[in-house]
Amino acid sequence: MTNKNEDADGFGDLFENNECKCDISAPKQRKPSYEPVHVPCTISDILQIWSSQSNDDVSSRLGICPGDVYSLDGMFLHTWGETHVEQPSRLTSIIECLHNHFWINHQYRWKLIEGRMITNEEILLVHSERLLQEFLLLERGEEINDDFVSVRTLSYANAEYNLESVGPITARACRTAAGSTLRVISSVVSGDLDCGFALVRPAGHHSSSDHIGTFCGLNSVAIGAVYAIRILHVDRVLILDWDVHRSGGTEQILGQMSLEDSKKYHLIDIYAAFGKLSHPSVSSENCQLIDMYNRNQIPGDTEYLHIFDMKILPCILEYCPSLIIISAGFDAAIGDSEECAQITANGYFQMTKRLKHLNIPLVFILEGGYNQHSLIQSIEGTFRALLDLS
Image (cartoon, rainbow, N blue to C red; front, side, top):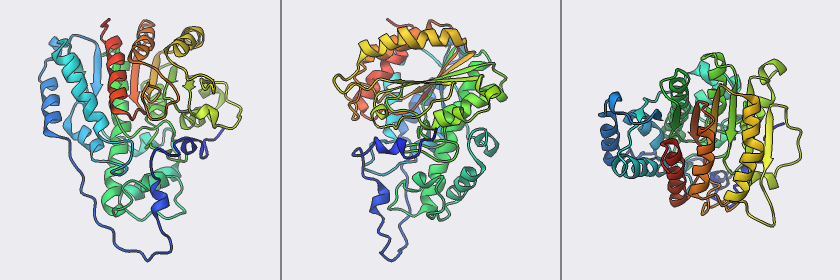
């Protein structure tokens, strides 16, 4: 299957598409340069506090990535635009929440993992050569015309500014998000950690092998899964995508694999938003789609946990993966702007607790979640389970 336009249709009224702002009849003028805002000093101070803790004092086998200011700043500098629903403050709000609620109030400690930028060779693990070449043009700040369809979505970021100043910043964020994902996966697979959480942006699960999806950069989760199999020599990887939107991109990447390779990967995609918009399609055998959309009742904790117990957990136990990667979008939370699901903080706690009790290495990769209050509550619920708090 392909995800042509599928990832974009459902976002409709969430934000003004910068593509629509372009007046092709107007004479071209030199746009101003973008001046990015760096990570606040308060966040740098928190990371310094976290990193000053010795590994001997770590109270859990949980790791957070990135733990260095340079990598976090690389993702914070990137924005889609001032009015866009996906903002850099998502990351800093999460860090402040974790620091105040768990580090200070509960005296819990975790291991910090330095981020890094992904290499071109690693991008090619799942993305096409054409996408990479267009991505490199963006990274150099060169003009992107209508022929460059693979990365067109990225070229709309901060469209009121010139691409020469915006392109390298956007590309750096994409490289850092994907590279940091690989770093935390490596730490978990090596046995240093039981669980890892990659606080990264932009998201990636709508990006296919040939196209960057809406709100997304490189498909960090898909790259991470293939990296775990080919480079880290893991036997089987299961991807659980609980973002409220159908992944599309991850599904396409796994679905086009050879029969032999496809047996090493399994996707469980549980969604409530794009299910009502997607066209009927034949899913590949290694992709299990669970459509939660119900026009008569918005699904919440009860419905999601029922699906977890009756379908997801039995599937995981049958497949017996060596690693579980969670595409952890939190836009199915109650109060999020999509309003397609109503999972509470306790719902995310219960889902994460069930996964942790499987005693299979877990890696969470941040995807969606745009209402700050809902996002923080959901993150708190997830970390309560990861840290074995009731």
